[in-house]
Image (cartoon, rainbow, N blue to C red; front, top):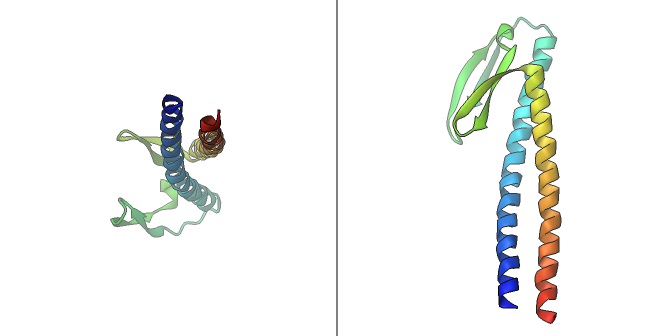
Length: 127
């Protein structure tokens, strides 16, 4: 019994960590997707006026930038592991949409798995 409960508890902790990582990642993906869509709309509106903005370098570090409409043909996205790639705006939007839906689906699967594991931990001692 102890061995089975320990296995279920171990799987529960790992699944909770994975779910928390997804909960942290989803808002970042949404924020990035919002910005890509904003840049796309701004480019399509054909405004010649440059955009003055502050962008986040780190949690508490921001830099001021002036973005001209000509500079919004592509965006640079962090992929992780210190890798950044340039994407055309449409491709970046599509990729971020896919990543967001995959992360939300994965989070749903994690939550289902957690329910199952909690049920197994509760039922296991009564066997």
